[in-house]
Length: 414
Image 1 (cartoon, helix red, strand yellow):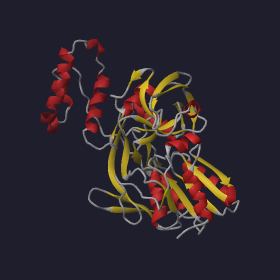
Image 2 (tube, helix red, strand yellow):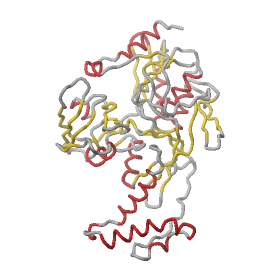
Image 3 (cartoon, rainbow, N blue to C red):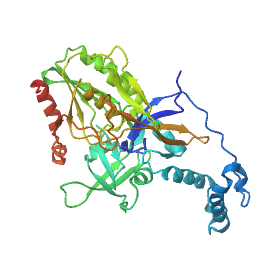
Image 4 (cartoon, rainbow, N blue to C red):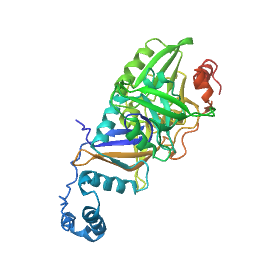
């Protein structure tokens, strides 16, 4: 039986719940792989002048500046009683991971690790919105249906510039999310946001809540078109998707719309299962390691809709990682048309590796390619049919991308 302590994930730091930072932001995506024991960690003394004794012999010279700085902080810092050696250690590890220069590699402390795992299970406390932390501001990618964020009136594209009256424009978006926006259910928060088309910032008072998010929703549209949306490729997505798709297929639909907009990713295993419902055999995607070795990940058997039923996949700029695995596979194999705008462009794979204190190191270990061997990392997938969705559309409750998908399926073009 596979263990969840080490997860190979395609993570995207975009489109994350405003409660945690899965993917440092989105989640991401990943395969469960056999558990590995955390590497043995030397016991490091915090006694000034004796720190280097815990460093492996072959690294003592290289790590001498680190321990010198550690000793200087403990010797000279004016408020020694305020020093927390655990926080100092975590800051050092975080700095090392950040120094790699890869925004998808990083470090989660034990609390962040627990938050990430909870989010993938679909439950957390927060305002109920997916966010993008890759830009200059913490940006709403999509409020969740029925959430405090939606009820308050937040919209896709809103940029948070102040929290509880405090300017946060100089803070990293992830710190704004973690230190300012997160909070227990029942507590209140005041957000100031910039919105495209509005000359002045907008103000919102929101009460945080416990959010339970289904990873899959579905319904039958008019004209006998099946519609199924994946919000996150999480713990329950594979089973939920097969169950809901089976219900839709039992109604003999004329066509299928798969909505992957604003989906920042999740587990690789879930992405493979979803794509396999529409692709009967062959490669879903390739993993490519540093030495150029490509390993195919093939379709699972017994898909529910592998025939010729017309199909459209809705994508946008926040469709990332696992969403792009599924979209790329369906596009390359000719199984479906992509409709919307160019996707995020997250084509690397991370391992979530547990450390001895319950924290997690996230390390990029491979790139992935579509079945045709195309790398979309940094470029994204270009839709077959481009349809924009504006801020005005969101505000008016219009969905021109869904409307265009329905029209295409009713009157397919070559």
